[in-house]
Length: 228
Image (cartoon, rainbow, N blue to C red; front, top):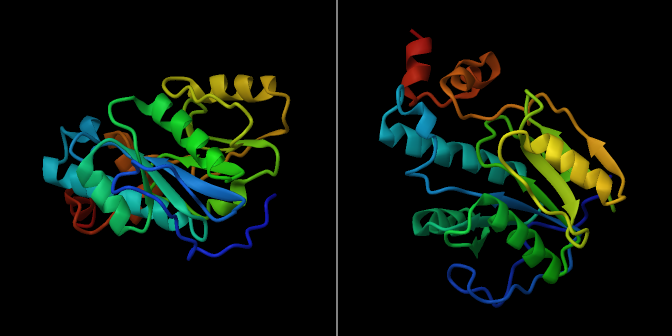
């Protein structure tokens, strides 16, 4: 596994307000790439039990957890919403502005941008992982790491060499497509079934999961109801 030796105080140069300029980055082994959806559109499947305001706050809350879990690696946020971009900059992340391209293209472009900036490995993490822990340890030098969700359906986290030619294919059964693709690249592949990273927050059933329910913020209406 990759040993992290650099400090979070590394800074980018030549970056436009929303990532419009080419990246120039100090030499690092790995960085975390987090695609973040418009907070106002996130968590739509929770609309039946949470207000729009709570869904926005919940999306921000989980994204903040994933950013914190990236330490001490530099963080890049791929997004197409200015509110998200402003939030990312305030959180110390570098914004990769990817308007209206969809998740797969945003991640593919993000991995390529990191590679062009001299970053050797990209750790791609979804922004809705409420129990995310240290992401820096996931890198397998010269290889690919896949972290599936609890159903072995989606891919909650993946770590890939930026020059490997890996092409993301998110959506239903993405873990199986990613695994087949990774094996086809001829690189070492590790499947990591992490009980915390396997938990994402997307449906009412996810909110009721014992580990997630315990970690939810006190302001969330469903959490207040569970504590009565």
